[in-house]
Structures are given as structure tokens and as C-alpha cells.
Amino acid sequence: MLQLQLIKGRFSKTEAFDLVSQMVNIKIKYHEDKIRDAEKEEDIKMRENRIKELQRELHEFKSRILSNEQAVNIESGIVIA
Image (cartoon, rainbow, N blue to C red; front, side, top):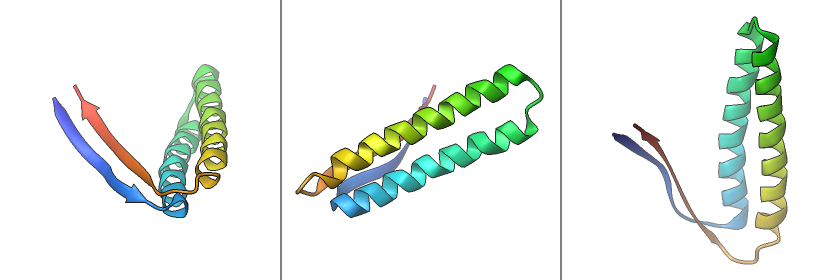
């Protein structure tokens, strides 16, 4: 098993939103690039749905994080098994 720690720290609400939104936007761009190369309609639909889900989750995150008065702790990693 391989583990990669991407983020670990305490961030202001603005820093937290900026960091998470940049990560989500990279994932959205990944799906957009895959859509351009996709040949199967089902692959395109799946990726379009995932993009919408990521956008919805980011919007919800923004609403919650920016209403928070305190700094937040963020931990994020990848586990490859």
C-alpha cells in the first residue's frame, strides 16, 4: 500500500476555501480532458455527472466554510492499494 499525504494543517477560512477549490478544479479539468477524448456516450455522461457533483459539493463547502468564524484543520491524502 502506498500513502501520499497532500495536506495537513490549520488554515483560515479563505485559505481553506482557496486550497480546496483549486484541488476540486484540477479534478474537474481532469474529467473535462477525458470527455474530449471519450468515444463512448456512457463515459461522457458519467464524467459530466461527476463534474456536476464536484461543483455542487464545492458550492456547499463554500457556504459552510465561509460562514465559519474560526480557522479549520484540513487533512487530505491518497491511499493506493
